[in-house]
Amino acid sequence: TPSPIRDVLRIDHVPTPTIDSTHDRNNVLISAHYAGIQYPDFLQAQGLYQIKPPLPYTPGMDVVGLVVDKGSDVSDDRIRIGDRVYANTALCPSGGGGLGAL
Image (cartoon, rainbow, N blue to C red; front, top):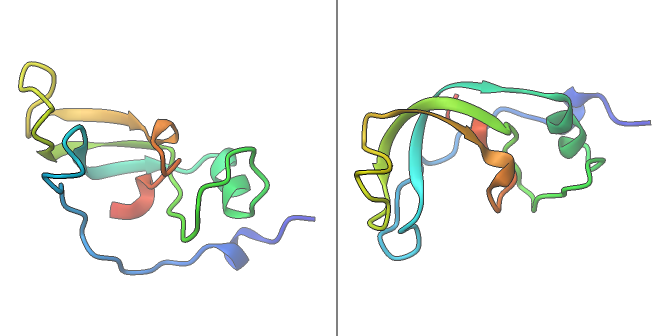
């Protein structure tokens, strides 16, 4: 039986992420305005989902917000700072993190 979600999640304060010009050339930093919590997020937090991200893990596969920074290889014709965006972070190597800025 899965643990109650309150037993596997907690609110914590972490440093604000930044774009590293060496390692994050293709990344975009989003200021999250909304992040959804869905059933897979609950399963991942309990280690029951088929994708098991490394711990510590920040859930949130869907996020909506504004682009606040971007890597050097992200061209202006694709995305600009200030653009409103939706991201499905389940496709990212970390497998989540949308709730990290809320």
